[in-house]
Image 1 (cartoon, rainbow, N blue to C red):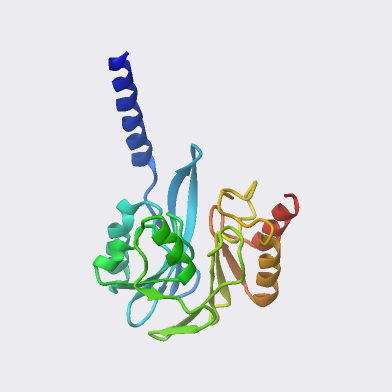
Image 2 (cartoon, rainbow, N blue to C red; image 1 turned 90 degrees about the vertical axis):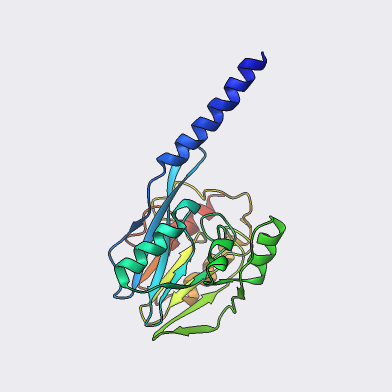
Length: 240
């Protein structure tokens, strides 16, 4: 019986390593604007592989990363790839909420001297979970101007999590909706273990009103091309 238990433990460990190894490497999409890129990373949840959409912005001073790769093993390779492709270093990381596919492990970037940004609420959650917090606090609603580029990190209310924020790029009229916005291809709301489903519709209504001029809204996961992501998210919420 003891040998069988040991065999099961070894099998589970091997299987988990195999599944982890099978997760695809990150993909940098063609630029959606001259200085704005979407990069996709992948992870397994509930036995199924999902893609995560994140963005980075090229500035004259360096590259600003919005959210980190889902897999910690890809942190360094993404930085190296960005450096090689754009001949610029990553100078800042902004987390849109506390989850593994967004804030991940900020200690990696902190230890490299890269400024990390998160809201007070996100840091509170990270600290509670025993994870590294950011070196800087995001001032929501305040324009950040770096190397000729501008963006605003906005908190519209609770939804996917209590701390989810969006990022507005006014020059491009593009909104990075993060996990607050579901893809038009999503079958459901995904992970809702930390969601405020009751407040989510009001938050989406505020998003739709405040960013009515957006030419593109990027959802947090799955297919990002095309429109209708905001409307589909609202429809999914109405079915709850």
